Length: 481
Image (cartoon, rainbow, N blue to C red; front, side):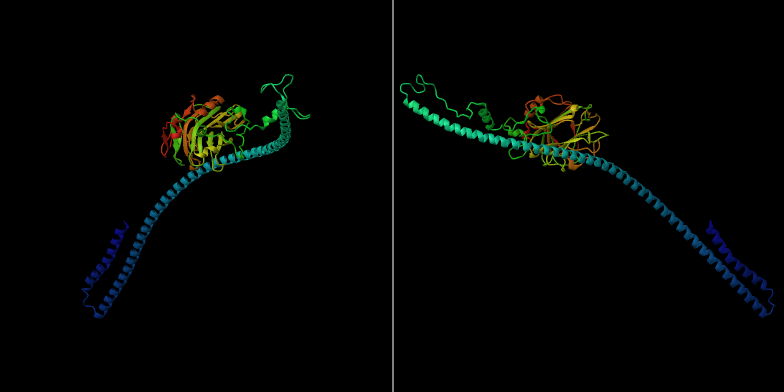
C-alpha cells in the first residue's frame, strides 16, 4: 500500500511546477507593454523560484527513495531473520532429540554397568572366599603332609626292621635246609617225601626275640608291602567322599581325574539324541529352552554330554528372571584357571568347579546335582566324582517365570549376551530333572547303557534362530564331526 502512494506524490510534485509555469506565461502575455528590463527580472525570478522548487522537489524525492530503499532493506532483513529463527528452532529440536537419545543410552549403559559391577563385586567376594578356603585347605594339607611324612618315616623304620628280621630268618631257613638235606641223606628205606618212623618233621628254628613267619606282625608287614590300588576308578557313592575334595593326586603330583569314556575300552556312546553344535563365539549362537522351568525347583540335576572346541568352557547354561539375571549359571571365564567353572545359584552365591578334562576336545558326560536340603551339591564327570560340598544355598528355591538359554550368559532376561562368554563346542543328551539323582542312577548314566526318564527339559525343547548353530543327528557320539 505504501509504494503506490509514494509514486503518485512524486508525479504530483513534478506536474505542479509545470502547471505554475504555464499559468505564469499566460498572465504575462497582456503585459507586453512593460519594460524589457522589468520583464527580464521577473522571468529571472520565476526561473530562480522554479529552480529552487525543482531542487526542493528532487531533495524530497531523494529522501523518499532512500526511505523506500531502507524499508525494503528492513523487510528483507526481517525475512532473513525469520528464516534464521526457523533454522535455529529446527537445530534446537534436533539437538534436543539427540540429547534425549544420548541420555537414554547413557541410562541403559549405567544400568548395565551397575549390574556388571555387582557381578564383579560378588565374584571378587567369591574369589576371596575361595582363596581363604584354599588357604585353609593348604594349611590342613600341610599338616596332613607332615603327619603323612611322620607316618612314612615310622613305616620306613618298621620296614627296615622287618627287612633285617627277614634276612636273619632267611639265613636260619637256609641253615635248617642244609640240616634237613643232611638228615635225608642219612635215612635209608623211606621213600622220598616221607619221614622215617620215630622222627617228626623239622621246622625252622626261630631265634629268641624274633617273630615267627606266621606271626600277625609279619603278615601285617606283608600287607603294607603290597602295591597300593590304582586310582583310575573314583568311587560312585557321593556320600562316601569327603566334602570339597577331588580324586587323590597321582604320582606326578597332579590331580588324578577320572579317565574319559574312550579310555575305558567299553562300547561307544550311541542313541543319545540330537547333537547341538555351537561353531564359534558369537552372540547369535544361543538356544532357548522352552519358557524356562515349569515350576520352582528345590532340587536339580543337569546331565549332558559336552565336547569343547576352543580350549575354554564359556557358558554352558544360564537361567535369568526380571529380578536376578543369575538365578542358575554354569559359566567359565578367562579370569579363572583354565577349565574352572562357576556354579551360580541365586547370585551372588557361587562355587568354583574344576572341569579341566573338558578341554581335551573329547566327549565327556557331566552331571551337576544340587538339593536345597543342607545345600548339598555334587559334580560328576564320566565315571568319577569330581567335587562335592554342602551349605550352598541351603533352603533356596529357584523361582519360576525366567528365561533358560544354552551357550550364553544373560545380563538381562533373554538378552545382554557377550561373545567373550560364549560356549564353543557341542552338547548332546541334555536332561534337566527337578530332583537329585541317587548314586545308582548316576552310575547308570556314567556307563551310558541306560537312559533315565523324568526329565522336565531336554534338547528337544531347544529353539534358536540366526547365527551358525545346527542340530546334527549322529548314531554314536564318537562318529560326530
